Length: 124
Image 1: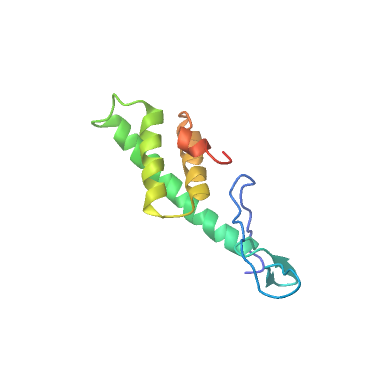
Image 2: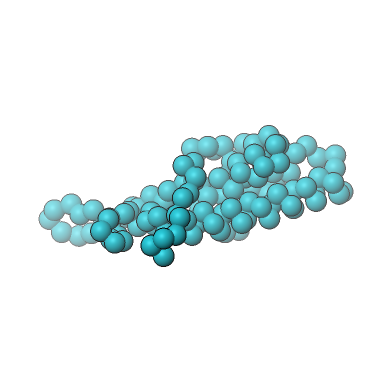
């Protein structure tokens, strides 16, 4: 895996490691990969894996949104279609809320549709 390209878009959310380890002195949670240290979930390999799942999900929603808009929901504004799917995906637990917001910003960009409000909340 050393030769793999783990490029991840700069706007893809990075997990926030919140934790505490007991003791007198403060401790920093880190994971060692090779000769470098990363916050948990933030190594290039881990970020790329999460991004790959989210990108795949975004491409599936691109197809689903096109199907929805050309079907019985043709009269529904594009932003409302995206908003409904975004809110449902957050409840489904397919990823973090930040990841789902990123997915729907990506879907909106690919489709050239307006970004739904729920995809802009909290850091969009």
